[in-house]
Length: 323
Ligand code: MTE
View 1 (cartoon, rainbow, N blue to C red):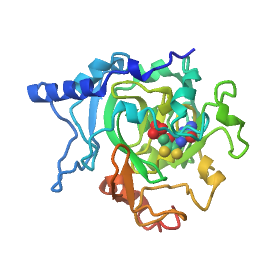
View 2 (cartoon, rainbow, N blue to C red):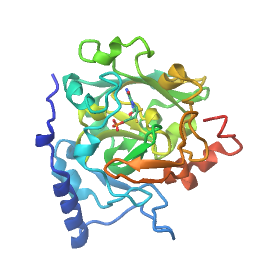
View 3 (cartoon, protein in one colour):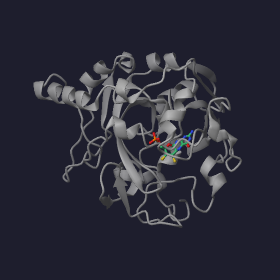
View 4 (cartoon, helix red, strand yellow):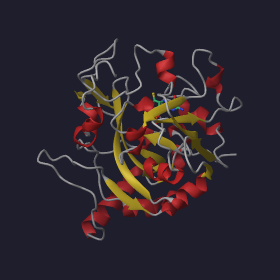
């Protein structure tokens, strides 16, 4: 049975940020992988390696963290905001109800099966994923297709490291992801509107990109259930629905896989789902977004600020057709 995380038990994020500020001022850590561009934003992933034990001992991760904004210069949302406004349809379509309902999800033991078109299929226990791969901090903006966003300090490791272990065969062209499905603890599964379990997909080159993260924590501690415990995908240049939660299966496949949201409403939610202010949703504009916690809308940036890093993946593609 998973131990529920109540917000009162969560390390206050101002302690986390103060600790980070202290370390930075003291000049103890070196800053790696951070390139400042002319406009003052960072031009490469904001990445810091932290000890995998940091997931269990939050203050260790906090001490290692050295960056304080996402690529567009916004500071992280509070832990309170990040863990109390959630899309996790397995529990509820009401964002403010998910945090409570998700506490019933059982996340230990947990294993992720990696298979399909690979030379080394395997099943990885969550603890092994924590110890086998260095855990890094990545501060990413999660831009929901609904027009809001949040800035989240994730910990995790790049998906390509796990895929390299599995060794994709030459005919593997896409990666398919599947969320856990437990009718006893997930009341949302009773809805016949959706095709459960939640499933998502990426093209193999998107999955292999260094920005694509398997997140195992946020704010230096284990992922709250409502944010996709114990392990979820985060693809920072795509709308949030690609960032599938609570993953139990990763499968390499030859054909573009069907996805949860394209099955539900194909004209509204495409396979690629790249953040793009130039391509509106059929029912609303995508030109701006509201960062949760702020009343103002700010312009949405193509690929969520990562055009330099990922634009080449879509060279020659019409993004209004491949939305
Ligand atoms: N994964 C699963 N399994 N179920 C979901 O309903 N919602 C998606 C994505 N991953 C969802 C999911 C959507 S629409 C968004 S915007 C993000 O999770 C929200 O992540 P957050 O609650 O951590 O902010």
